[in-house]
Structure formats: structure tokens, C-alpha cells
Length: 557
Image (cartoon, rainbow, N blue to C red):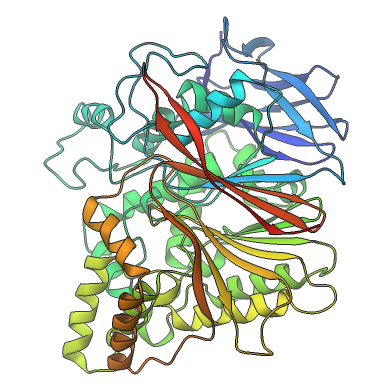
């Protein structure tokens, strides 16, 4: 009998269609059967000995929630036998329903369970980084299926950690190869990437959550390696190693399979020649490897960014890693084609959306000291103070992770201008929110433009991470310090040394910083928007509970 190795993951949904992703243990026909008669069928495709399907479901009724089953070669494999969780459902909203978007980033794999825990989370071993916010969020939804649930879950990077593996995975890797040889305890190839996803998504609570709440994903650095694409010099050093090419190609191949294709609508998939070719060949390993090699050699030829619309809420998920231009004289967070795409998607049909969400794994607005330090460093690295300072700048850039939007000053200014343009005029949305993670704490920052140049929309940087990780105490203290007035003064002194002009916008922190494993949820109805931040706290006897630490109204009705 064909088995379900991983999944199902409910990915795309709209009023009448959905896609559901699965990994199986052999080739088969994968089918979704819904309680209301909607259904979908496809055959699996193969990559490196693994078998996958993204099942299109049609015939759904808007405004309903219908339970579904997964069948492989006619045999039911989901729900699992004796599952303690409620049935997985596909929900299709109506145009006037509120839109709830939960988001976060940076989820290190949960520790193994001492036995299979049920919806309460009992039976889990002590977690060295505290309760997993995603796991705890799933526990609450499973305990009360009628509770308020998100319409979509945005995972804003570091879905897996290719360079920081768990003890269990390191033991598994040691059974395959010598961990004293590069890349050591980091993953080396496609098979090892499959292990990361298996470990992360097989967690019972998270597996159920991803089966019943649609998800949108984008990578960040740890999906490949810490500080991926920091600079041209960094990339040259990585390409000189014996192991980098296999790591990168495997990372892009596995991202395409496990994350990217589920981000796309059925119509987009139908127009994707690679997706069609993967289905038309008995073994797509070579096809995907060639695709990943092209993406490495010419990043501008591949677009990982995408757009999703949820009623009158527009989401633009932006690739701020692979699409970078790294040459010092022309550094940019986005290559010209990616920047043009972002502008086109932002301004297309203005007036047709009330809220614009820009998902980028890296925060646009940082604490002022960090922003000025990164802009100063960028000036040093491009030679503004001479070759000696340029060498010092490159070392600092790598040591201190100075590679956010502020490290690409032209891109920072371009995004500020685009947001101001999109948020201005009679057809402007009520809010423009930049959703980010990466920095292992949460905060709210609000920009302001010079008089007469600012948008009519309310603009916010909403940063939320980690979902499940930790921040060392020195960094914790550094982030607290970075928001102070003294730190801002120090930052301007650095900027003065580098000859850096003031950025085109100013901003202030209006919430946080908050530290812990956490998720944010935006609720949007009409032109109103509200925000909630919840943290996972350990509870006596095991498991965790979600505690609300911030609730605020962003715009009124």
C-alpha cells in the first residue's frame, strides 16, 4: 500500500479552488475528496527518488468549510487512523468576510516527542528554546475548532535551517558521511534537505495546522546558509569551496518542490513550463538541477516573488535573497526585473485593494543605530574611504550580519518612494504594511516622510520572529540598546564618517521590542485593520500556551 510520507499541506485557496501538497513513498495517483463533492486528482512526480504531488481541487463553494480526505491509489491515508485532531478542512471566504493573516519567521525544528502528543501538546520533551509558537498555535486551534483562525499563514523565511541542524539530524547525517569534512553538520545535498523538511513538518500539531490553514512561504538565508548573498566577495569565497555548489543547487531544488510551487495559483502553474516538464518526465531530478544551476548563474532569469489577493487585501511576497545585485558599484536588494515586477504589482489596479502587504524576510525599517551602521558599512565597502576601509568594511559586514535593506541604500530609498506613491491619492489603500522577520525579536515601526511628501495610507513595519528559536543575551541587549536616543546619536556619527545623507524617511518605534517565540496576526475588514501579537509560554506539565502581549487598532472603519 502506498504511504503518505509528509503532508498534506493546504497551500493555495480562493473561492472555488485549492491546491494540496503531499509527499508519498512511491509513485501513485493522489486524490483529494471533499465532503461536499469537490475533488481533485493528479499523478505524483519524482525528484531524486522522492515522490510528490500538488493536487488541484476544484468545485469548492465560496463561503464554506468542507472536510477533506487524501487517497493514494484509492486508499485513504488522511486523516491518520485514530487521529486526535479535528478533520482537516478547506475554507473558502466570501468577499465581505474579514481577512486574517498570521505571520512569523525563523522556525528551528521542534525537539522529538517522547511519544506522539495529542492536541494538548502533552508528552513532549523539554524544549531547549521554549515552546514552538506554531505548535502552540495549532494546539489552540485543535482544542477549539470554532475559534478564530487565520485565512492564511505567512512563513517569512528560515522554514528550515540548512546550517544549524538538530541533534537528531546530526546523528542521521553522521550515518551518511564524515561530519569532520565540509560542510560538517550542515546539509550537503538534496536527500539531506528532505530530512530537514521531514523533521520539521512531521511534528503532529504543525502537520495538522498546515493541513487546514493555507500557507504562503518565502525563503531567507538559513534555508541555504547564514547571510546568504551578503556580498560579491562573500559569494566568491563560497564558490571556491568544494561543497557550496551542491548545497546551493539542492537548496533551490528542494525549495521549489517543498515551498515554491505551493505558493502559486492553479492558473500560474498551468502556464509554468518547468512545472509541466517536471510532470512529463519519469524523473525530474536533472530538469530541476539544470533549473537551479541557471538560477545560480543568472538569478535575474528566475522569479521567486509572487502575488496573492485575498478579497481586498493584496499580498506581495518579495524575494530579498536570491534576487540581489551584489557588485559593489551597483548593489541592489532586487535586480532590475524584480524591482520592476514589484512596482507593477504594487500599482496595478490601485483602488481595488484596501490593504497592501509587502512580505520581505528582512525588515525594511531597523533600529536607527543598525540602519546607520549598515549604510555606513555599505559606503566603506564600495570604497568611499579607500581600499583599507573597504577591506575592514567587508570583514565587519560578515561578522555583524550587515546585509538588510539599509545595506542597500538605493533599494531602501526606492521602496520608500514606491510605498509613498502606492499610499497616496484618492484611491490609496488604508494601510501599507511591510511584514518581516529574521531579527529574532518583534517590533512595530512607523515611518514619516518630509512634509507634503508622505502617503495618505498608514504605513507600518511589522516585524515578527522567531516562531521557534532563541536570541543570545548579548544580541538581546544590543537590540534593546539600538532603539535608544543615545544609539541613534551614535548611528548618525557613523553615518557622518561615511558621508551618508539622511534617509528619505524617518521612523519611530511604536511597539516593542518583544522577545520570545511569537506570531503576529493582522485582521482586516473593509478599511479597518487590527494587530495582535501572541507569545508561546511554557505551561506546567509540558506543552505551551499563547499569551497576547500586544493588541492595537491600526485603522478604524
